[in-house]
Length: 175
Image 1: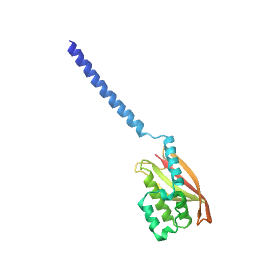
Image 2: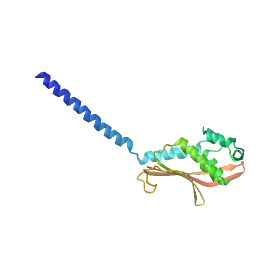
Image 3: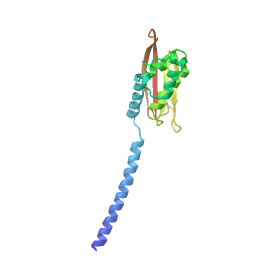
Image 4: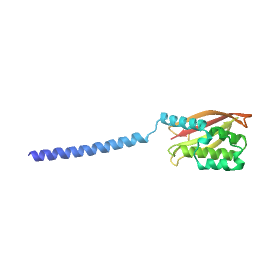
């Protein structure tokens, strides 16, 4: 009699443990898989701040080092610029291809493909897309349920004499 009661209790304990583990697994996978507006905003702010504050010479990427080695590009680069300032300087000098390439290098080394990104440069109502990434299963920015838009003004000097200003870097990030 005691043996059968112990077996029933043991079976009940094992069954309850399995149900508890499965339930926690389902709940945990749902909580981990959801993103809040605060997380999107925080990530967008972090990316924008890094883009506007990271010095060009702090990027540890072989493609950036190749830019420094290329004599036609080397004269256009100021290693004291932030990544955003250098991208704006390239655009100001008419080298949009270099601005887009530098932005791509920065974004690819910094962010993962879990969200949609659109990094643009604005000057006098002209919008220049520097980098855009939209996941396969992602809606557009306008149709997304969770999104954030962050802007920063960028200004700098070329050859320490010519001032460029009025450029706005805008990051749209969504899930």
